[in-house]
Length: 118
Length: 116
Picture (cartoon, one colour):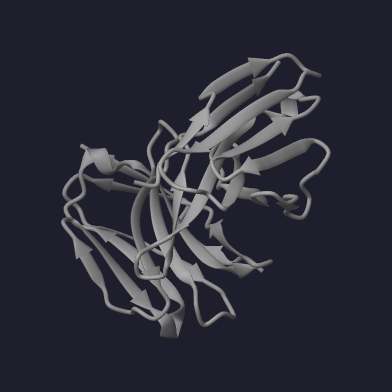
């Protein structure tokens, strides 16, 4: 259980265009979703936290207008990279938290999207 | 201040050697969760273990074992009799309550290379 599907797995786009990445929870309701960015040989950096039906909370240094996050339903969150530039090329991963039976929290991750901006 | 520190950037061992990956965390909360993930070259994160702050019992799962010590804020991961398939990047992560959400913060990762 607790599977998250992320699409596309890779995308190449031209500089200046926008790209949308989708993250769907398949068998549970994802009240909270997270978006991470990972540059080559680096760690996963949290970009933003989105809660269903409300505005996303962005981490310091992340441009809200460039990385638009929409979490309109309990099963879908999207990240749109607007006016993409080569420096936005990265591996983007979504994650959803879910409560465990013992009251603890777990996280499930999408398979990631490799974005290349040319 | 870095929340999760993985001081070992890269480790190289020969197959069948034991290897320990270090993780030191920092938090002011009394309730938090610690995780280890494996990231093979494909990029997909593989969940290995979750530990909550109230459970200091060490855990063993096959060749994997974890040592959680609150006194030193460490959550180390040992692979016994390493295999080539263990080669990957391993991340330690901390989940604590921030802005009304339990956010997962990753360490910088340790790249493990197991040579035949």
